[in-house]
Amino acid sequence: MGQNLRGRSFLKLIDYTPEEIRYLLDLAKDFKSMKRAGTVHKYLEGQNIAIIFEKTSTRTRCSFEVAAHDLGMGVTYLDPTGSQMGHKESVADTARVLGRMFDGIEFRGFKQEHVEQLAKYAGVPVWNGLTDQWHPTQMLADMLTMEEHFGYLKGLKFVYMGDARNNMANSLMIVCAKLGVNFVACAPKELFPEEDLVKKAKEIAKEHFSTVELIEDVKEATTDADVIYTDVWVSMGEPAEEWERRIKLLREYQVTTEVMQNAKKEAIFLHCLPAFHDKGTKVGREIYEKYGMEAIEVTDEVFESKQSLVFDQAENRMHTIKAVMYATLK
Ligand code: CP
Ligand code: NVA
Image (tube, rainbow, N blue to C red; front, side):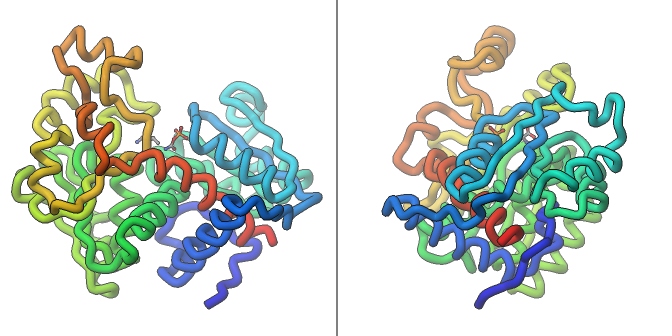
């Protein structure tokens, strides 16, 4: 059924009902088909958006830019140092300025409170392109990828391995609970998600006949999983010194072929990317030299395997972000 999301901001998925999330997923599927068929869909011609990045990005930035162009909109990119925001101008003042010029604003940064403030003062829809706490646009791409592969979401067993206190784990726990996917955080106790959030997620899950579990043992957690998901062990904005502690804590939580074999035969591997799966990056090489690990959160064998759908996921960022912009601006 159609949902009216016009004028709404997209800040975190706790704010959205399962029906609204469903609507955005369906819209994304339509846009994906149109893109594949080469059907022009410049439905938002004449509108303009600003995209603000306090942290670096490949997928999110490119998705917003390509999606905006496909919809016929103009885009202004503000890089981590390219605006007055935070240095010489408050978030509230920046929001009121940008709100006079743009029809929508994307923000990627550190504090969730900043994206919430932007939304409060801008008077136009604001989309969260990742904060320390949440990564809501990524959720739509992940759920779309799973649904495309399995044909359904409800009842799937989803296992998130690694740093279960970060923006990805928080967001996945909530979106799974809302969409009836059984969520397992597989991590050492020290990196289990915040208690309050787990409580909230469990309440949501109960309403949608799904479960939320926190399990330390890798074998127990991953048995019969449909989806194995991981993310970087140290997120953007965290100090580089964290690596040592995280490696100690998470070494046994690397996604390996053995982990995938313990999951269902048809299980898939997902990762929001970027991923440290080999020595092809500066960080990857440093970790190898210091700790002798050829890969960090996922082995190259799993990353490159047929079970890995990470590039479908990356493509789906664009289609889903397009759906969010269209639904909130049309
Ligand atoms: N997954 C994701 O958000 O990627 P980027 O950091 O490249 O935007
Ligand atoms: N947890 C990661 C996600 C990157 C898309 C980070 O915040 O760096």
